[in-house]
Length: 385
Image 1 (spheres, rainbow, N blue to C red):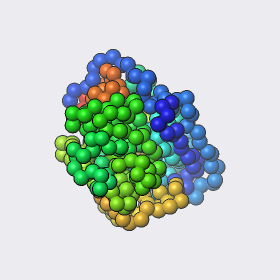
Image 2 (image 1 turned 180 degrees about the vertical axis):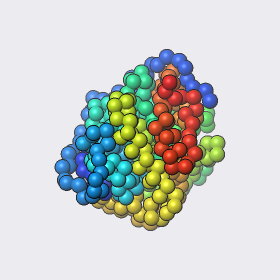
Image 3 (image 1 turned 90 degrees about the horizontal axis):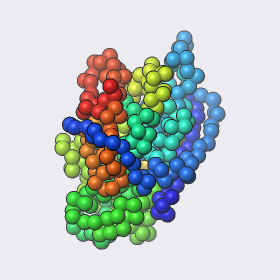
């Protein structure tokens, strides 16, 4: 494993409490430098929590597809706000009836892909790059993207004393969360568009890319170890609270200022064997997004309460408010932008000839959306046949 790549980890809650367009059509070859491969040897680790449920199952509720439980994964990031709200407000448990909702909280996308592949989770919220990496590495056999969750919420924040303009980024040390993760790929692509050269694996070049866990990045910034960071929320706003300045919002680089930052994935085996359970989780996600839209302040508070449960500390208003405002929660997976992000990974040298045909199966989500009277979504020609 690369020396500058932090070992990923997760925390398993294991209880149902309220805490917790053109497609690429070429062969698949994934380079050995991909973080998914690097982390495979590290393991992802988990801790079981057999605490009895604090959520009440409605009288007469039935198990979904005869399942005792459904295992759901997500990150403790505001860009996973749909999941945070869904857990905190009990939407998942309500939709699953007498089937227990179990949760695992992850720190890195590759570890969540490992968990999905091993059966440690059935369905999860994840960034686009790990989903692309996981799908291509398995030659299209391990997962499907079955829904969208969020757009935006990613910023380049810098030390204003060292970096006063975009051109000043050259020669500086900029943190990204992990080699090959969604923000890392986006930053490498932006660097290339400036005409600068960086070796993707080592992070060395005209800009020094320092792969640093989001939990560590604020301390790295305060110590001067990095001059800025291309990071998701709430890390970006945490840095701003420490005196950093937003130099660029990634949304400004995309058409209509929309790009996928969080998707919902499911193992193909689970989708085939338990379609009603998948629909139930997707219904909970749609309901959570509906609540977020109807009551943004209440939803923001719910997400923060869940973060406090996961981390032991709620976000202060000076971090929470700007972070939440910069994220758009959506049921649409924004499939065309996933295709573009895959091209960015190819250009950075992290993927070679990815075949994304079949990565989406949006039929269950569109069924849920139609039943809710909402607009259906499109797979940009990358749907399962």
